[in-house]
Length: 220
Image (cartoon, rainbow, N blue to C red; front, side):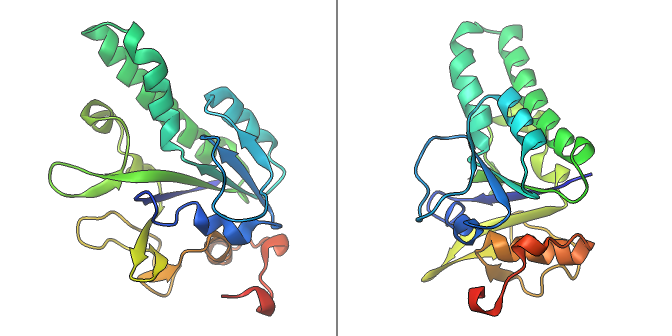
């Protein structure tokens, strides 16, 4: 059973920038959108919004930690490619069912089919519901009623701008969903740094990866 980690945040909040120190470490990257990364360097991986290729990437990824960046566009892109052909009524409901089934199936695959020493980071934009609660951005109420994405993750981190720097929020703060196991992170706010997060999660669960261990000269 691999560990899925959900990361949400507004555009520009530092979600992709958090991967900066993953360059040269044991990470692979699935880029759902073909856009440049906001830092120098490369993380080996794939560019695709095709679920079947994503599954193959997760299965074949040599790294112990895999990032799916802009994962919400797996939902959005599928919707935009198919909604105009679905007409109305039951066809539209069928499309939303497919959207929900596809994404649910992906998370279930991560949890149930991938090795226990793997961590998969699912990065998505955030949205606000009618009650002011912050959640992962999907494609509307029909999908949200079908699947509660946050409920499928034990670890949900929210990327935020804190004055002059980016941070991850590790526990619920007001109406914004964030959660992590007790004692995994020492503080409510932690560095916006996936390498740091990866090491803390691995230390907590006893699945350390020597390839990602930080040296003193690499710490923040």
